[in-house]
Image 1 (tube, helix red, strand yellow):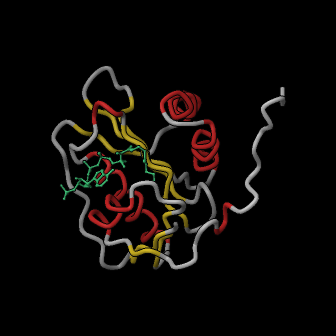
Image 2 (cartoon, rainbow, N blue to C red; image 1 turned 180 degrees about the vertical axis):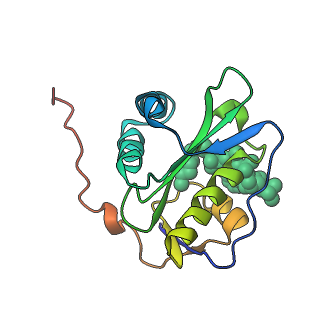
Image 3 (cartoon, rainbow, N blue to C red; image 1 turned 45 degrees about the vertical axis):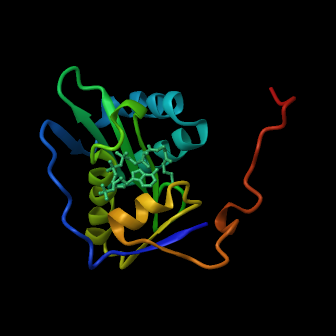
Length: 157
Ligand SMILES: CC(C)(COP(=O)(O)OP(=O)(O)OC[C@H]1O[C@@H](n2cnc3c(N)ncnc32)[C@H](O)[C@@H]1OP(=O)(O)O)[C@@H](O)C(=O)NCCC(=O)NCCS
């Protein structure tokens, strides 16, 4: 299921103590793609690389304290134009507001780039998107843009 998010009426992004949310710089790109592959999936790492290749780049990373290891990320224009996601927060850091801060950072970035709406594709946590950004379900949106997605066969090298 895909969800639609109206961007002009977004709440402000919360500031959390000790949490930095920012766009990465060049030397961090490979680390971020590897981190996303390790903690989430190869498909999300592929989307992260895509977002990092956009100009301006369209991925935010969250870090907390030192050492500056990522605790979460969120991208937009990574699956298709106008889509927000993927978004992921480390298991150990969830339910503390980091996901909301990352999602809102991405959505405000989309608004600043001129979008009126964002689409969250193939949503796995619909209540999170509803609560944070007022997302609504798009009828008949499965499989949507994901129809016929390439998959490796079990015998592929
Ligand atoms: C979804 C995810 C990014 C949320 O990150 P988080 O840091 O735990 O989210 P927050 O703490 O900012 O939560 C914000 C709000 O959403 C709610 N929420 C968070 N995760 C939720 C979930 N899985 N289902 C329902 N509500 C959720 C929180 O209770 C909170 O509500 P409140 O403001 O009323 O208290 C995180 O659980 C995650 O990385 N999950 C695995 C990857 C994933 O499923 N990504 C989404 C794919 S569509």
